[in-house]
Structures are given as structure tokens and as C-alpha cells.
Image (cartoon, rainbow, N blue to C red; front, top):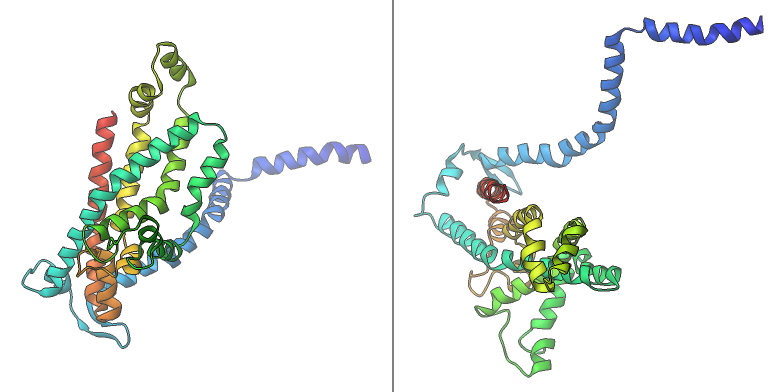
Length: 312
């Protein structure tokens, strides 16, 4: 009897699997896959989907952050951004121009310096130590980084001016204010781009590097004619994300210069913040934010397409 049960039990299980309909098995697999995706979907809806929809709703209303909507505006607040006789429109586009200036200045350094440092670390001993050293500033908060550099760059009592016997108004005059913000940004975010560059360099075919060495190419020529051409995909990616990050400039302008001198370092994000939380025009600030987002998405799209065409 026990032997019969031992033989029949596997057969019964196999028969049960055969009698299960295909659509039930497919439905089970889909439910199982959904269970893995569901936590991300919930987080996406709560922290991105709902805020975006709510932001669009606010941008279509005259909205005060204290009392809420004071009237429906429709698309008028978007259209007002292109009416240059309105002061807020002029200031918004001036802040966008300031942001573009910052992007043009900072992005070449945010791509070029990490590339050079990554290759130098690749060729140097104690790689782990150098990687940790350069990546450390990235883990600091924007507030901490800005406070460090405000201390270093203060005109009176600043560590840099006192050390070198200077009286340079780093944070209160141009072009020093932009130089200060750019140096701070590069120092802070260099580590993230460096890690991406270093990972790309380590994936280069060793045979190619060895062939360059056998042919007599030195470090500089190998870097220029072997490493850089083979890192075009990585460079394109870093270029796009550096541009997006630079367009979102906020903390450095807010904490280091306050947007000054005058409004010369007031970024678009800082102006939108002031418009929404200081002037209490949350509706127009939301319209500005979505307009800036659309412009940035278009720039990133064409940037990436152009980079891909160059690579191909």
C-alpha cells in the first residue's frame, strides 16, 4: 500500500499540472511579475505622479500657498511668460539666461576634469584610495558644501584671501561670483562623473591599450587617440546628465550669493522659488517650473540625439 502511494503521488501531481489551464498559469505569472513591480509603482504614483498632476492643477489657477486657489487662470499664466512687457516674464527669462551662462561655463569642466582624473587614477597605484578621496565631496549636502566654500571665499576673513594676502570679492562681484559657484559645483559633483568615467575606462579592451603601448604611444597620446574615442558613449551620457544637473542650479546661488550681485547669479530654479514662496505667486511659479522642464527635456533630447549621431 505504501509503495503504491509513493508511485501514485508524483503521477497525481503531474496530472494536476497538466489539467491546470494555460490562461491560469499565464495569469499567475503576470500577478507574480506585478508583485515585484508594485512597490516601485506605488512610490512612483505617490512621489512623482500625484505631485506632477497637482502641480499642473496649481499652474492653471491663481494660487496662493496660504489660502489656495483664488481663481481659475487656464493657460494664461503660461502665455504671460511670453509677454515680455510683464516684469515677472522679463525676470524669468533673465534667470534662464543666467542659468544658460552657468551651464556653458560649468559643463565642460564637469566632463573634462573627471575624464582626466579618472584616467590618471586608472594609471596610478592605490586606486581605491584616490577614488574614495575624489568621491567624498559628493556625499555632502548642498548646505554643507556651500557653507564650506562661503567660509573659504569670504572677502574679509576668508581662508583663501587670508592665506594668499588677497582682497578678492569672490561672492559679491562679477565675474568672481560665477567663478566661485562654478568651482564649488565642480568640486562637489566631480566624484559622481568620475566614477562613471572610471567604470568606462576599466571596460576598455586591454589588448587595445597594450597595442598602443607597443606602438610607442605615450600616456598622453594613448589618452587622446585611444581612450577618448572609445569612451564616446560614456562621454555623451555624462554630458547630458551634467547639463540637466547644471540647469537645476539652486543651492549654490541661494546659499552662496543670494542670486547677487544684483540678480546676475539668480538661476531659474531660484527665481521660481522666490516667485512661489516669497512673492506667494504659486500658480505662476508652477507654470514657470513646467515651462523650464519642457525646455530642459527638449535640450536633453536633442543633445542625446546629436551625441548618438556622432557616435554612430
